[in-house]
Length: 178
Image (cartoon, rainbow, N blue to C red; front, side, top):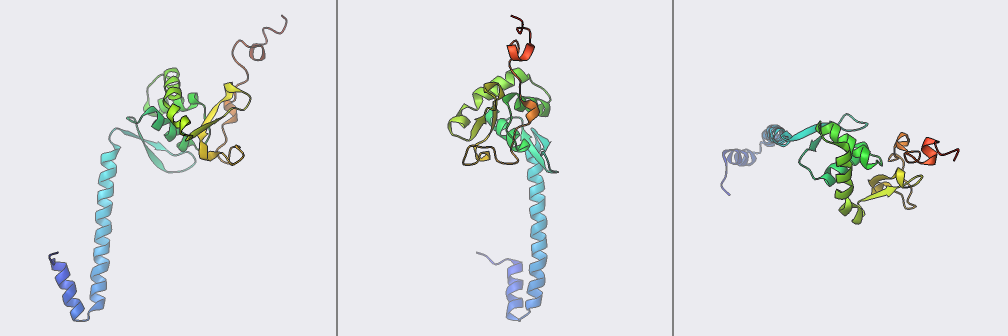
């Protein structure tokens, strides 16, 4: 390795026993290094923002980058992590449509259901179904404790619970007199 001007200067100062001067140069170089790192980081962020959307993380001031080019499974995981709770496919689809500013919620719900099959098989996501299949919520498997119960902080939104299917006796009351 070839000695640079700075190395030659440092060796000379060392030979002369000028440790304070070496420390001063070190501190200056450290600040220059941190400045250079900041510029590189800023450049990478600006480059990576193209084609992505900034999303504010739920319950925090952090801004996350959402990539419209992700697979449906990646988008699904992003939304779950961002919201930090179990969600229905439809809720996730609504979030994606809101972030991307376009799309059909019904179509996206079906795509998410099909596209997350591998995540289900690999046990990366799991479901809970309080009150039956109409109330199926999905979340990360690690959000369940050893008893299969949802850990605190990852609970589904109870306002998303459905009360029976359309046209069923429970939901309409139209069949009560039959």
